[in-house]
Image (cartoon, rainbow, N blue to C red; front, side, top):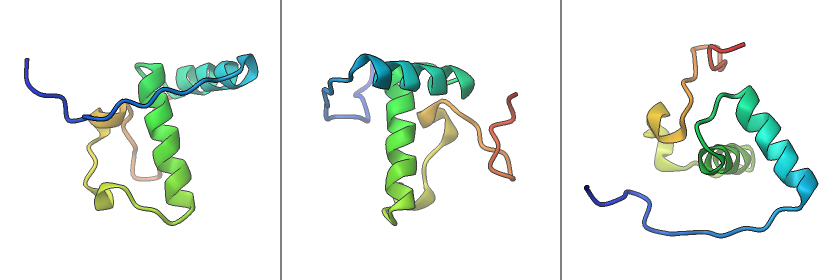
Length: 76
């Protein structure tokens, strides 16, 4: 197995309401895992504050979603 691209581990604690909101959002977006959902939400939150990650060089498979030209994920 090759080396993971994500070399840092971050542990967070969530209360029941935060975890429920995360899981609801994750399933609505068809994210494959909680970790991928947290990474996507972090990326989106930082982007709204003006911080760009990877300067747009991210691949959709890294986040578990596919964005269409209109910003939708093509799902429901």
